[in-house]
Length: 585
Ligand SMILES: *[C@@H]1O[C@H](CO)[C@@H](O)[C@H](O)[C@H]1NC(C)=O
Ligand SMILES: *[C@@H]1O[C@H](CO)[C@@H](O)[C@H](O)[C@H]1NC(C)=O
Ligand SMILES: *[C@@H]1O[C@H](CO)[C@@H](O)[C@H](O)[C@H]1NC(C)=O
Ligand SMILES: *[C@@H]1O[C@H](CO)[C@@H](O)[C@H](O)[C@H]1NC(C)=O
Ligand SMILES: *[C@@H]1O[C@H](CO)[C@@H](O)[C@H](O)[C@H]1NC(C)=O
Ligand SMILES: *[C@@H]1O[C@H](CO)[C@@H](O)[C@H](O)[C@H]1NC(C)=O
Ligand SMILES: *[C@@H]1O[C@H](CO)[C@@H](O)[C@H](O)[C@H]1NC(C)=O
Image (tube, rainbow, N blue to C red; front, side, top):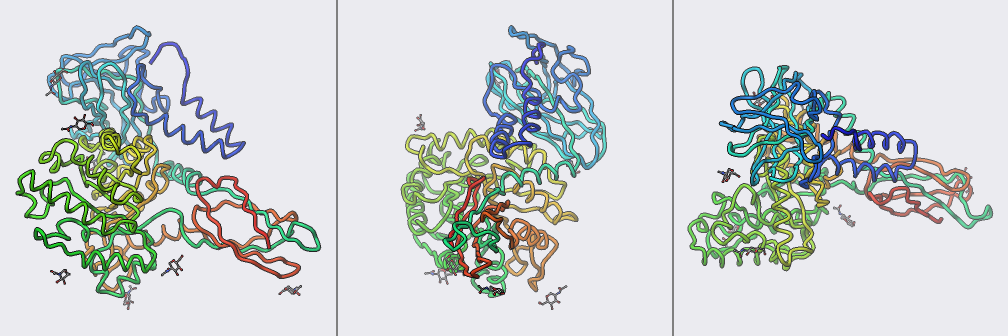
């Protein structure tokens, strides 16, 4: 950090929030967005970005007091350096092992979330730098990583959820020991579960609801206004897509059909559209099941995410594909994409085009580095309406992930959508959301979503699943709430269902279609994320103001004098803020 105080973004934002909470929410919304951006840039900056949370529990976070409060971790050496712009930062050099760096001891408290951030640089090239917490029993818990570069500062943003109370050394790691690790402006901010939840609620108010006004007019003996008109506002469709995967068992069971259609308006077929399902033997395409599932969905107004055209994992190719020579693979893959995308053109809201292409590279290995980019291009030409998604695991759920870290995800997204001709394709960020049995690391989940959200590309959680365990239902609820409250998230699909259909590990309903605990959570959230019917009265001028969840509505208006009434429809979206809806009866 520079020795001169300079511009403190955090203070500025706190002040801006305080002032704006007195004034117009329109401006609050803008500042809120800036707030997320300023906390999550993936740009590499000439000077380190600002310190967050005043450093939180980190002492001497800006190295203004030299190396005070920091110690050498492992072997190697550390030193304080001062840049030509008079900025002080810490350097780890002569490293012998990846974790050789410097550390500071903090006390972790069980049940707390810790948001972490620091600005990092490496002395040469570009290397992944991670933050780790070494607990009392010697375990290294990773809290996130970033690909840091030479010559500019990158933001390493992440966090952990503490399982137990323990002193821990906060330290930095990089596998390539021949580079120095440079660090500045380190922050670790603890939050209780209640504080975390409160922030979610504040965010939900801002990103899922809009304050709107209605003006009801009528040409009657009293002139224009309909003072005291009675209105009844009913939500006819929820604005936020919250759906569930389904499989072929839906075709066999009226109970499963009723269970599904009474809850969900969005789906993904978990396997039925995959290449190994539609062309298990070369040349023998069979869409019987996928077509029938599509018809069921269409008959019930359920929107479908197409999943998937290709899967970049060698293991999940149809058997006959695994051994094809490159030229034959190219031909077979072209036939596949043409076949499945033309068949469902105009009928889907999204396509997972090349599934898991950060973790795997079957098509790149066989057909060249631009294989996936070319398939996005072809899919778009065959079906220009659906959003074309990447779809990855571990990006938001696992703070030890390097391959599919949020920074690498963003880079891959940019590679694919800046490939010549792909610039106009509507892009989507799919994050699967397969969580383990432990406490979900919501601090890391939020920081990852913040980073992905800086692209401005809509984020969907596409396959939310929480491993079985004592707290499965509670963990599921925490994950779903975190996603719903994040401004960058535009939809959630779970990969779950009734035991009847084989969804045993995260069953939402038992064999009698009675809810499991996880099913109760889902039903509770469906209710919570839906507007209740609202009965109200317009004022003497015919005005009425209220705050509504986004979605489609029906309004019935009754003139209290003439008793004449009318019904209209309207929609509330993010853009409806302070909008005035005019109705005439
Ligand atoms: C480690 O970093 C040095 C310096 O940037 C570089 O020359 C070398 O190739 C890197 N090693 C690996 C394995 O990436
Ligand atoms: C939480 O507990 C699990 C299982 O013991 C462990 O693997 C994980 O690293 C722990 N995480 C934290 C942040 O302590
Ligand atoms: C296509 O799949 C359906 C459903 O599995 C099956 O009943 C049918 O026999 C298959 N058609 C052919 C030609 O194999
Ligand atoms: C589907 O939507 C259409 C148009 O909004 C509506 O007429 C129809 O009743 C809906 N069907 C079901 C099963 O909800
Ligand atoms: C892949 O695409 C990039 C960007 O258009 C191009 O520079 C590169 O040469 C391509 N690689 C191959 C093997 O065609
Ligand atoms: C579960 O479902 C069955 C069949 O619908 C019903 O008879 C039973 O009472 C239900 N059990 C519970 C605990 O609700
Ligand atoms: C309107 O309805 C109210 C209650 O149903 C009734 O008392 C009143 O007489 C009605 N007025 C007219 C003009 O029909």
